Image 1 (spheres, one colour):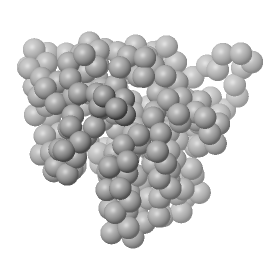
Image 2: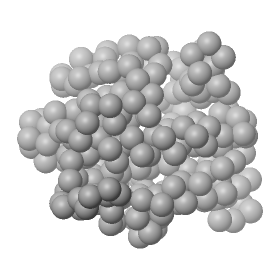
Image 3: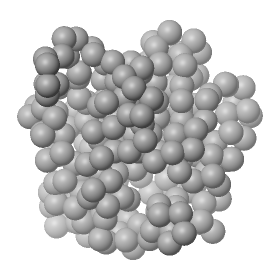
Length: 230
């Protein structure tokens, strides 16, 4: 559910459940399988700048930094509570990450200064306008020749997947999550580049199917609308 005062959906739907978030993700999403594949897909390299949009408790940001210690990682999230946990986890892991408070739609305000923009398990939680604005902001945050990577619940193609996905809908609310189950992420990525709507990989989980997407930003941008290719 959306936090009435802060206008975002807290981890697991309620701020009181935030301490349980990391354990729930491990248990309910086959996290090791899809996150390992996502890390390989992102392929972080020394010297790159990467922004993790909706970084939550910092799990992905920390993995990125460990995989490429010379990487500059920015973790962005609107929830002060999860950012505190992310900072503590990074300190315990011995990695240095820049943490910023902000919504997905704020990512583009820094300009095209990142080599890669990444996001995991974020867009299923937000309203349609924020899905659209957030993905557009990730594209705007990346330099020509860079990449956008998204891992999330996208189209749930079978009745079983949709039934499993109801667990997520019970936690995060049906209003925002149903659009993802019906293909919103694929449609928004297709608007950027038709081939970007095809998942690189998908993972069946106890809470529905998680899909991994990649959007390649061309090295040369045309005047006016920037074209993209996956």
